[in-house]
Image 1 (spheres, rainbow, N blue to C red):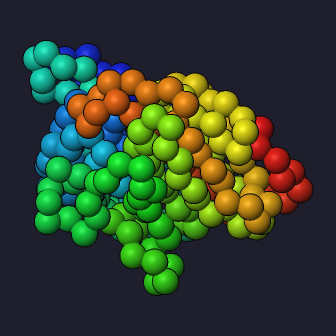
Image 2 (cartoon, helix red, strand yellow):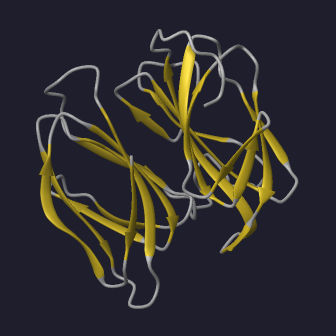
Image 3 (cartoon, rainbow, N blue to C red):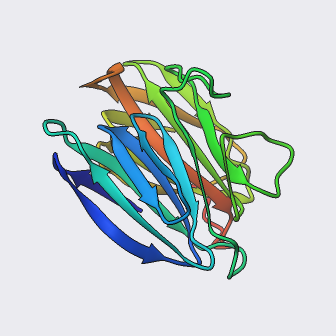
Length: 217
């Protein structure tokens, strides 16, 4: 997981990837993506994009704003198999026609396994991974189910959070092992964003690694 801050009129020139699922979540600013598959688009806050690098893909990422910095969280995930066809897709949070509407104090299920037909998410990837995000107003609480056979990595993106009685501040990340009890996540400090005064988290859940730990670290 990379937490990238790109200054105005800067970016990453065309470069290659292969055999990786790459999930990118935009925190603020606007990310412009272009690749050799013919995809080109700009995405703002709350949007998510994925790239199945598979057999090989080349792309660039830029912040074309002359004034505003761009912050995005990019996570690399090993796919379940190598040599997959390269693919790109996204969910544009600013597009009102999208199936998922951005609302505060609500956990949004943004990505899931392409083989999981029991849930519909804006993004599907080639691995048993679920991606969640939420923007939370001060004092408000959300819950996320994390079964006992699942574990998660949660990043406090903005503000501060109380998670089952333990505190996380901005940029803190934590590994969580499910014990059958839902995660209770409360905003204890907020910061001013383009969507209002909020705390904010991004979480990836996956199969338990067998360590047997069940508490929040």
